[in-house]
Length: 292
Image 1: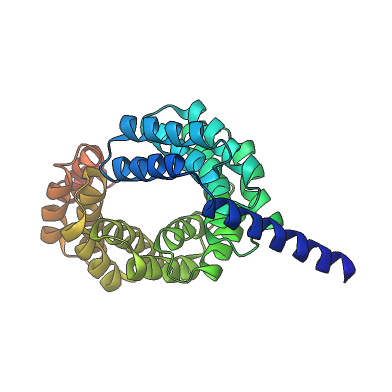
Image 2 (image 1 turned 180 degrees about the vertical axis):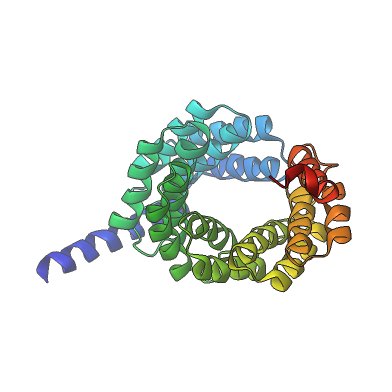
């Protein structure tokens, strides 16, 4: 009990100290920082970098300036410099949760250092915020990419527990569940991914995946609905073609050969699906060829 009270007092003191620092910035540092923010909003990242460095020159104890400097370095592809800036921001403010997550994302996505990514996300959920949906998402994504789908399910489940409207987390959670052949769970996850998707494109991708779940479950009418929705909203070749291929599969299973061929032909226009679609068309048009 005494230890928990001591930790709370330390946290409150450090938070108060950071707030006091923010209120005591020099005008030169504050103005340069604001200029950096304005440049960053305009996507003028080299100018923003220059401004943030000016802010740091006038106040070397400025974690937000280092954090935003790291973001701009990442935008310009200077990943090692971004890593250094993020680490400096964390050094100055050890409770800077968003920067830990940003650093973890940098390790995961740009630097291909998955172990460092895991350690960084774990630092958030063990020492800063054990309800950090973004950190749990990062951990889930690492394990999904490592094809450890059970671990992915564990962490994505936590991500959506603490953010019930996290569309992207539901989508990859569903992908992990589909890989583990947990079809009912995957169905529910993809439905939520469609419901909470951040754009028509993301909703379309989730509908495409939902259609594949329904094919596995032999719910062909539901698959038809999901693939039709996906084909209307997906623009990327793989998902557009895949949705048409899925509709071909649905109509083949329902014995509607002409409709199946029509959708396989649409799928064949996609480079990603041409070979598979042409094969299915040949099977339907020349059944005797495959009778043995």
